[in-house]
Length: 256
Image 1 (tube, one colour):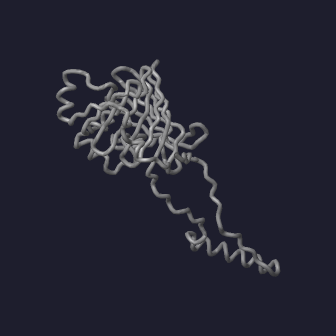
Image 2 (cartoon, rainbow, N blue to C red):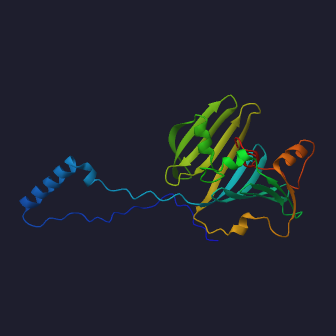
Image 3 (spheres, rainbow, N blue to C red):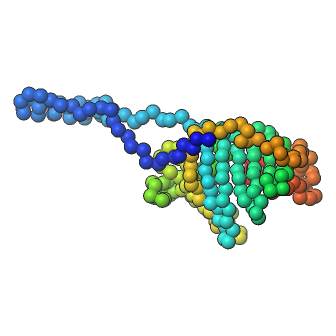
C-alpha cells in the first residue's frame, strides 16, 4: 500500500517570468509606469493566479490518540468513500471495525471471532455526501451551530479553531488551514460528568492504494450474522458478539 503523506506546507512557484525592458532609463521608467497603471486598472490580470482546486481524495488514513482521564487508546483509521476500517486495541484484544455498504462488522482478532450486523437504513443514508466516515468533527460542529473563534497554530501548522457550547458541554476542533482541511485535534468537555475527551489526529494520508479485501472480514474468522431488527431485539436482553460495538452511529445512524 502506498502511503501518500499529507504535507501541510507546499511551495507555490509561479511559471511567469518578470518583465524586462531594454533601452534608455527613460524608456524603462516609462514602461514601468505603464505596467503599474495597467495593474491598477486591471488588478485581476496582474494578480498571481491560484492553482485549480484539487479533487477531493477518495481514500484516507489517520492515526488517532484518544485520551479521557486515565484512559488511552490508539486507533488507526482507513477509508475509501463510505467504507471504513478501524483498528483499536482494547483490553489486550485487537478489535477491527469494518463498515462496508449495508454491513457493520466487529472482529476480535485474538479469539478469531466476529459479529456482522445489517446496518439501519438511517445509517446507510448518512453515507451520502460524506467525504469519509471518520474525522468529521468539524462538519458535526457546524451543524450544531458552531463558529470559528480564532486562528492559531498546532505543531507548527496554521489552524482554525471552531467551537460550540450547549447544554451538554463544549466541543472544540482545530482544523488545518490548508487543503484538504483535516482536523488535528477534537476536544469535548462533557458537562454532566466533567470529563474531557481528546482526539489527537496524526499521520494523515490520502490517495492510498487500498485493496477491496482490506475492508472484508478475513476468511479465517468465525462470523455470527444478524439482521438489524434481530440484533436490536436480542442485544436489548444480553451482550452479543466477541467485540464491542464501536462507532455506533455507523450502525444505528444519528450523531457520532
